[in-house]
Length: 450
Image 1 (cartoon, one colour):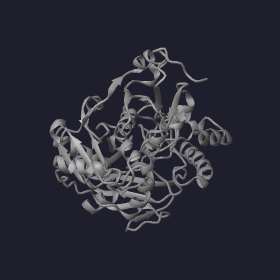
Image 2 (image 1 turned 90 degrees about the vertical axis):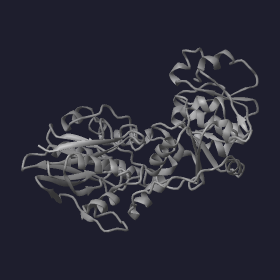
Image 3 (image 1 turned 120 degrees about the vertical axis):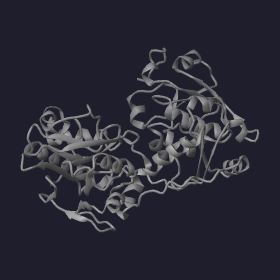
Image 4 (image 1 turned 45 degrees about the horizontal axis):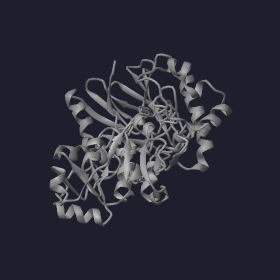
């Protein structure tokens, strides 16, 4: 039986797969930092012969073209897609063979019009697995609104039929391997679990538990905001992106750092958000380095704006660079590491950090302004009655709409609130960062708007 190796990218909620028979290998939906895939292939002493894309991705810059070029493999992309590179163009029911492995192509439109799934067989046996990309996810499906609102209903109906087709033609025991659904905003509804089979999906998948009209109505009604940088991924992937060159950014001295800040450039501090609040270079923005880093920075920063990174150490900057290349931010204008006081030329700022209990204790203050920076769907599901709502990615542009007073900024966990609080701090406002989980708000005694 073939081995299927899963390569996780938790920062984007995606998975890449390497499938091999001990000698030959295929790769499905590789991320742009292809070294991880090459390492897996080298460790198993297998040759990658084919690199397969389930679809033209909207949430990251693919590593498919670069990987196929690096190892001289066939690059498999749907024939229906218009791309600017040579590829092995495949259609529904085509077969791809590598050693004892056979992939049968299934056209499964919905997440995108040209979306494909790949059904794995080996040595003439029944299908053992299916790689579903953004079609059938674990209990869910991929979102259908990324191409444009005028296509959403048509794609949602196509998604429904595609998932049902997979369930109808594949055996219960076939394992399901989606690309999205592990925190990715490409998932239309919440996913469940970390593994599944066709038989299990027949019992739980949203597209297999509803009739078509109800499915379409519910799915479209539940679609929420997705990162703004997605708009730039499809064009980049159609061009055939090369592997990123991780060039060490030029080092900014304190004077250059101050010049960039005063010019309105984004100077992003990667440190832990509470350390930032305690002391930071005045005018910098807090985006803590962690799994959500690239998603939320890419969502917030004006696309193409000069970006400088501040870290505790050079390795932190390098880690941030790797994450950013996955979403097509390849150029870092400058970077700097070291103690805040050394970098600041005397310009050091800070602000308070508290929790929802701290907010409850001062709830009656007349000069207190509560700013909720969560997504619109989160706001609509429940919010504090006196709060102002500005999604975190709009705070910079709409800072002038925040009422006068001391601004207490919250989200659902504290991560996005740190971005919002630092943007307002940069704009000269007095802020308090509520670094707490939203489900603790009512336990702290805070009311919810009815």
